[in-house]
Image (tube, rainbow over all chains, first blue to last red; front, side, top):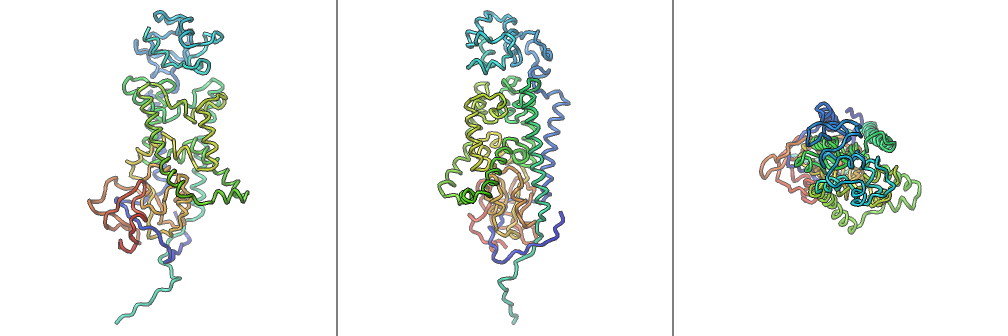
Length: 147
Length: 334
């Protein structure tokens, strides 16, 4: 940085004294910022390269079936979860009913979570939270596991 | 016998380089650009999610990563609504905090940017409406300062509630009151407790700069704690300081920069507004330090030339190492 003008500090200036317990060295103000941004970008880039970046339960990696180890197919609404842990927010009510969990029928599911009858079976589970108070995917998984 | 010439009162103590206004403008413009870019990115994600052809902005929230960390470590799965992107972004902002403390909050966080914009709007109105301007400039009373100090602890309570709650229940307990969650779902017009909190934050932002960041942000609290390990901080050199307190007045988090030696507070958002406001180049800047003391019972102090000297140890308050509380005049250290 080039400073052309000078600032005259008067004798009357009465700043609090500087006392630091650390050895310090001044660096350009932009350097730590640039480094921190670089680290953020590098973390995201490395995760994407390693296949650890997922923004949806439909993406392979996070949604891998715990039972089979196979990733759940992208946008595959015809598949069914094989265990309660495989149930994801993007799945529909229909997929849960078709999964064949013991004693789980459309009627029992609607009764358990007070899901209105006018909610279609094709509704994604994540959208049910807005229409059925008390419903969430975790609660559904726990209920399925307890059957 | 030598006679000493008495110094005239008008004689300056020293001359230091003045910070060019262009540098100040560049820094502020860079920050505003970064903030606007992130806000635009989030707005795009929200719009895509609303049209149901994209992921919710929730999966790009770094705090979600901290919320789901325990569940992920113990079960290998993420909590509902969260994905591995949250974990990656949490790791990313943690690295940012190690490199530059709260720089994520000051430069990238869209919710912080929104609060700052609202407060800026209020100040703009205050410059045009004299009565409002006078009200805004009134000094804070001791009662408010005490309340402010206590309220600032609130974000650690929110952090504990959100992280421990998520770990114990396996659900996002903070989501129901999270104003950010309400904001990213604002296109769906859902009235909820979180929406009420959002309205409260918006209204408060006209009066207090960054109220959510100061008093309730669990991500800010997390980054503040991680930032304690950072060797980077804003440092003040008293020998070149005018004592004008422009830095303190510029700080959106109301930290007492003009009495600090190093701004190590967990509340520092790394915005560098204090540095931009300081007219003296050597008085305020960013420095790197080793995160351990120089030696037992000794402190490093700056002399007029900018070099370090060793004096007696000073106790540091939260984020303010030394300062007026030490009651040590500058000459006593030389």
